[in-house]
Image (cartoon, rainbow, N blue to C red):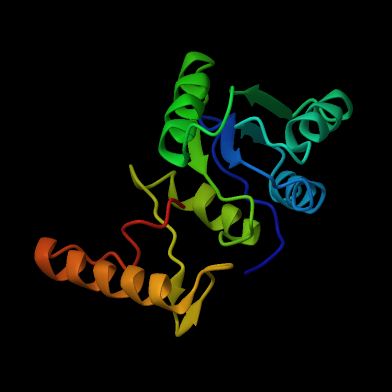
Length: 171
């Protein structure tokens, strides 16, 4: 991946990267600058599920200093899926041109965002994968869960006929 910034047509003005968090205090200070550094049109919404490690408080502190960071606090651990739904609603209400979802644990590499920004100009949907080119970028999964995910994705591709390497990757 290159570090160059994407020069897309004026139609794509604002893109939102939705990052659900629960106990991700250690990752946020590294993740946020990496995401924002990819393209000036990117903003981040941290959707925090009441992290006991202070992730939400840290996100608020970062948002005070960085206007492209926003924080949505939820009461308690309500789940990844509902965090994404809340983030999508938040982004749609504010009329962002593009919505991305990304894990805070670096399973999804921010360096791929420029490619996504470029591809979304031509395609309606852009998907990333944790299983490409012989690499696996899943973080902190036991081998059993990793194998289940990998083979379930292969099965889903076979059943649907879609050339998707990672149907459950969320990127």
